[in-house]
Length: 162
Image 1 (cartoon, helix red, strand yellow):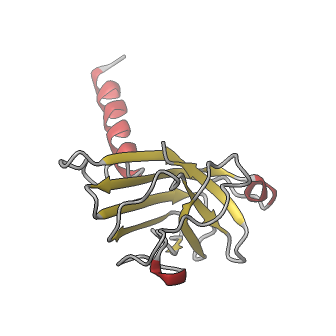
Image 2 (cartoon, one colour):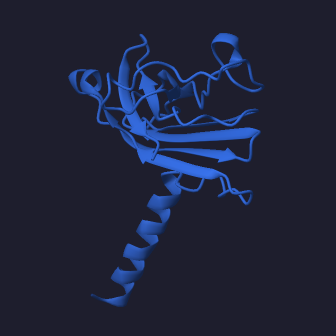
């Protein structure tokens, strides 16, 4: 393969990796935990004509903070989507229900501020959206996936946090 083509291929991989948000938050130096996963359609997303891709990442640092970020492609341009952490894997009842802390924490959104919402996110003209949040509490083991909801609340996509 010619050198210019090899260099172009390497640059494409670097750019694509950056655009997918795989390093939105640095790995924690305090022994924290980093989990991430790729977005894919849930059944309703496929039925509605979505072709979702992208990544979700969660960083649990120490005992006091959880950070979550998302990069989602394949959305409808200009639409706003609810995006938040759920309490089951994507293949278990479309990711179960909302992940909730046992009590209110600082920085969360939703009922009692005890949820983790890197959204809502608004899709650009290219159907791409990014979001992130930092919550004042470490997410438990049952913070297992990130779900994308269509504008009417239907679950259309999911990324397992593994």
